Each structure stands twice: as C-alpha cells, then as structure tokens.
Length: 326
Image (cartoon, rainbow, N blue to C red; front, side, top):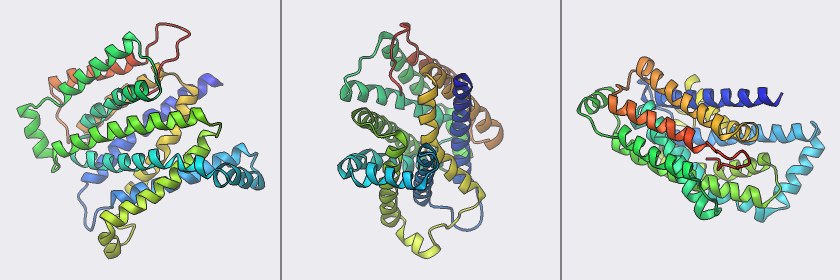
C-alpha cells in the first residue's frame, strides 16, 4: 500500500508540476480579446483554495466530526496566536514567489524556466546549512557545482536561440531570468524557515498550511490593491478569467499539498526522478505544442547536467543517512 502511495504521489507531482508550468505559460501568452487575467488575483484565489483543501483534510483527520474540527481549529490557531504569527514571514515570501512565477513564465519559455528554477535546490541547501546547521556530503556539494554549471549553459546566449526567442515570445528574457532567480532565493529561504517551524512544534502540516494560506491571502490582497487596484475597480476582480485560468489556479493551489504528500511517502531519489521527468516533458511539449522554444545543443547539454545534479543531490551512499530534502 505504501509503495502504491509512493508512486501515486510522484505521478501526481510530475503531472502537477508539468501541467502548471505549461498552462501558466500558455495562459500568459495566449492572445485573446478583452483584458488578460491579473496574476495577483490568481495567487489570492489559489491561497483560498489551499485553505479550503487543508480544512477538509483536517476534517477527515477529525473523523468527519464538525465539532471536533471546530475544536482543533480553535485550539491550534486561535488559542496559539504567537505560533500562528510565526507563519507570517514565510507566507509573505511565498506570496512574493508565486507572483514572480507568473512574471517568469510571461517572459520565459516553459523549458528554460523549468531548468533554471532547479537552482532552488542550491538555495535550499545553502539556507539549510546556515539556518539548520545541516551538513552536506561530498555528493551533495558536487551536485550543486554541476547544477550551477548546467543552469549557466542553459542561460548561455546563442544567436539562433536569441533570434527564435525574440520571434516566438514578446517577453523579456532578462526580466524572466531575474524573476526566476529571486523566486529561487525566496523558495529556499521560506522552505527552510517553514521546515524549522515544523520541527520546533507538534502542529500538523495541514494546520500549518491553513495558517500559511491565511497570511498568504492577506498579503496577496494587499498586492492586488497596491499594484492592480485601478484595474480591479475598472474591470472587476475576476477580469479575464476563463476555464484555462481556473485550471492554473487549481493546479497552483494543489502544489503545496502534493509536495507534502511526496515528502511523506517518497524519498529524495524518486523526487529527483519526478523533477527530471517533468523537465523533459516540459521541454518536449514547449517545443511541439506551445512552439515557443527552439532547443540548442548548449541547452540540451545544460539540461542533462541539471537532471544529473538533481539525481546526485538525492543520492546517499550510506543506508542510514538522512539526505536533505529540497
């Protein structure tokens, strides 16, 4: 049963990661009449959906008893205000990260984004060493060097790729790259900070995700009215929403829940396999379906290095070891 759950969670992770990147990219580049949906509002709706999903999971853990659910939420959230407030910092950073991903995929093709975003492994590892005093093995350090080399090759300028990028995408590759790099740093810091909080308390991961979602919704609404308030007042909160937009929002809401399931049921090597498969699928679909990406030999070599580094980072030669999850 546990083996089935392991591969099921990994299969869902591959599907969620690949489909989110591709649908988000497609939704941000699709030319249609009327205003485009606001990414800031999509982030808020995704947070609200995540809260509802986590409440349902807590309800299930409470044996589907509404009174028990109410007691758990009251005791774990309202009666522990300081514990709840601890989640404000990572929540604000996650909200920034989620908005940056929309910026990145508005300016980068799905394949380049997927490979470059794996730099979050590097930032997570460095923050784990500095904040959690974790020790990295030789394989982990070697994988980080290979990872940086691979991403450098992927971003290496080439005349044919530059011409194709300019022709196929109206966005700025520099803006997209900066957005991805900031998202990698924010992902690394927020992830390690959240891990530290989980280790210091006994609250369930679902309760913690409800707290994250609450602050994420507040920060997200602040972003909506600071940056897009004028557009919202003119065309409404749900301007430009269509079926594809709702698919993107649901997939983004599911992201954190899928990662939690993978951490619970799978190991780092299988997680690395899922990430690598997602990169390959994103590259193929970006080339054949979205047609906004022209692969080069340099990109191919860099992508292979990144995939190899992902596997190597999760490899632990000692059976009793406890590899860092990134």
